[in-house]
Image (cartoon, rainbow, N blue to C red; front, side):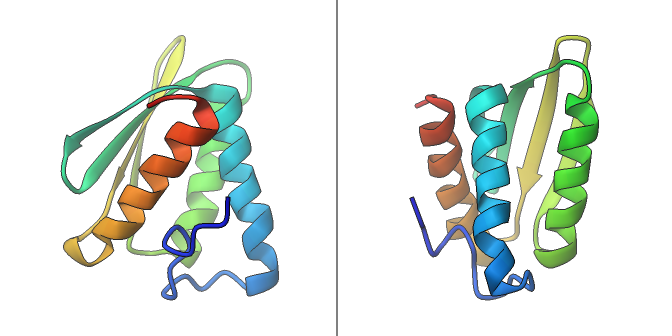
Length: 111
């Protein structure tokens, strides 16, 4: 699944690294995503199964993603059994958030 809206032109990640980063997100979604919701039009909330090292893994991925796609605003809320990952964007990147929601849902088996 190679959705060009998921990796917008404004992303500064080198092109050769893009497939690896997308694969990291897909793997996280497939292994850990239990639900997703859209509490607001420009915000996506992912619920991820927690466990040893998961919070660090999510934090690392979010930090690297923020470095190349500064339009994302990530908020991690750790819990004992689940981690909430809120992802917000501005109006100019609403289509990117929508593509991310579709991709996360498909990879995580969540509608």
